[in-house]
Each structure stands twice: as C-alpha cells, then as structure tokens.
Image 1 (tube, rainbow, N blue to C red):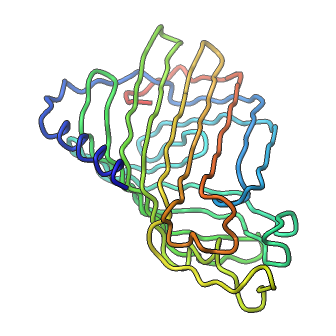
Image 2: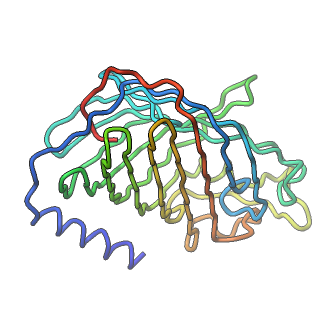
Length: 280
C-alpha cells in the first residue's frame, strides 16, 4: 500500500508540473480482422492455485469508430472528451469455472461467465509525442449468466496509473507497450460470489464464510501490442497481489499471488484502406 501511494504521488506531481506537448495522433486502420493461435494461462479465480493452460484460435477484431470501438476483447463507447479528461463506457468479461474441477470448490455452485459494464474516467497526467501517463478509474456493474438465467453480482472499481509507450517504425509497423498498477475494490456481493461459502456448502474442511466489501488487492500489468506488416503479436502478464484483501481469510483462498498471462500471433488478412486519427 505504501509503495503504491508513493508511485501515485510521484505521477500526480509529474502531471501537475509537466508541460504538455501538442497532441499527437496515429493514422490507424478503421477495420482490422485476423486469426491465429493463442496461449492463455489463468487461475480458476484469483486466489486459486489451479491454473488453466489453453491453446486456442484467436480472432483479431478491431474497429475504430466515432460511436464505439472494439479493441480485441474490449468494447468501448466514448461519452465525453475534453482536454486531458475522457469518459468512456466499456465492457469486459470473464470465463466460467466448473466447481467439480476445483478441489476447494467441490460440491459448490459453478462460477458462471460474467460481464462487467460501466463508465471509465481517464485523466492524462503527462504526454510526450505518442506516449502518455494516465490515471484511469473504471466502475463496473457485474452480471453473470449460465446462459439459462442472469444474476447480478455487485460492483467493482480498479483505480490505477498506466503508462503507454507507442512507436511507429514504418507505415505498417507499430508498437505499443503498457505498464500499469491498480488498486482493486469490490462490493460484498461481488466478493461473496467468489469467496463466500454458504451454510449448505460448508464441510469439516471448508467452514461457512461471508465475504465483506472493500479492498480486493493490487494488480500490476505488462502488455505488448506489435503490428508487423500483415501480422500482429500480442502479449500480456498480469499479477494480482491479494495480501490484506478483505477476503484473505476465506477458506477458498489458497494463495495471495495470482498470475494471468497470454501470447497470440495472428495473420491479419483484412485491413481497411480507410484510416482514422487516434492513439492505439
């Protein structure tokens, strides 16, 4: 907590004292479509030691429009932009988890696929050429479904600092690197969905547990987005540190360190000739 606070303070000082360069933009294709293999590794849920490793076909879909944009896995709708401040509407998702395949959750209800919907406020603290540092505050309402019914599972927010490094090498080669640190918070309903144990689900080794709302932990992210002619190489690594999380004493917690990473290479067989101004 102390380290994160110090980093935030330094970025705020930098943003208040730095001169902003004239806004820079990239010429980006309006549409991009591709397909290729991907490797994804993720835990059943943050705090579980059971890791899933998948090799799957990955559809690369990017659309940059005035009304909304699609960037691989995230859909964003711009709502308001003024100077350094941006307000977007975004949606993200998570995969389902079968409890029968998880040792600690055996006999419990499955974790359904979920979608998080809500606004994201971004404030640019510093910019230089194509690179910038932003403070981002997403607030999302989480709904989950087993494709037969839909249920609401609370709210989450992840305020954080992100550094975006961008470089155009040639007309068809560009690189984007992302470095981020965020604090994670959730309501009691959201935490209880993942870490709560009802009286009916309690056993001699898994006591009943009711989760509270509050701090979920801290997430540190590295990301790569590299376009090389007709190919795209994408990768990310995300570490979640759950020391001092409000649910740390849940019987469903096995570890305080959760790692998710992925790598994908696609052949982008269609790139529109129409371009738009913006930053990737």
